[in-house]
Image 1 (spheres, protein in one colour):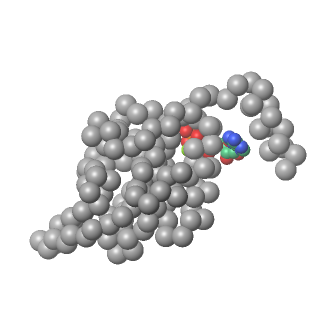
Image 2 (image 1 turned 90 degrees about the vertical axis):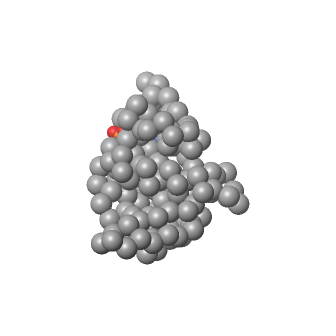
Image 3 (image 1 turned 30 degrees about the horizontal axis):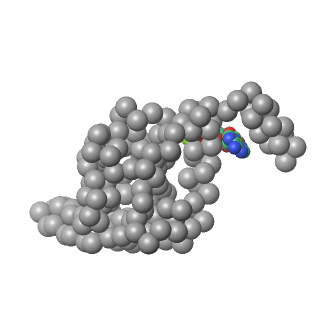
Length: 140
Ligand SMILES: Nc1ncnc2c1ncn2[C@@H]1O[C@H](COP(=O)(O)OP(=O)(O)OP(=O)(O)O)[C@@H](O)[C@H]1O
Ligand SMILES: [Mg+2]
């Protein structure tokens, strides 16, 4: 529903390890104009966003993203107006970007950033679901 929405609706998936968060976010790389980054290694993200203006920004493990980059996301998510100062020059862009992110927990995400997301909490798999997934993975 977020992807089909006319205006950006930002999604944060929160769930325990091995609940397919990364798998889901990576599958969204099939969308046109998407950019995938890992919160623990978001170097170059700002440059890419300014240069390519992706429609979908996919961020795995956003809780590991440095506060500076999380702060940049605030404006992107709220108004779409982003600025960057580099080598004494600043540039500003107006973007329409959906942010779809994942995290193991929401403790390390700064509160203003958290408030801009529609948060989806994933329950741990039941034993039956775990067996079903494992069998299907082993067969395929
Ligand atoms: N619903 C599922 N269907 C198929 N495979 C699954 C499913 N859930 C988990 N898996 C398997 O578990 C592996 C681990 O999932 P993934 O790395 O996406 O979890 P994660 O939620 O990102 O975990 P982490 O919080 O540790 O990063 C996947 O590569 C896949 O093989
Ligand atoms: Mg993961």
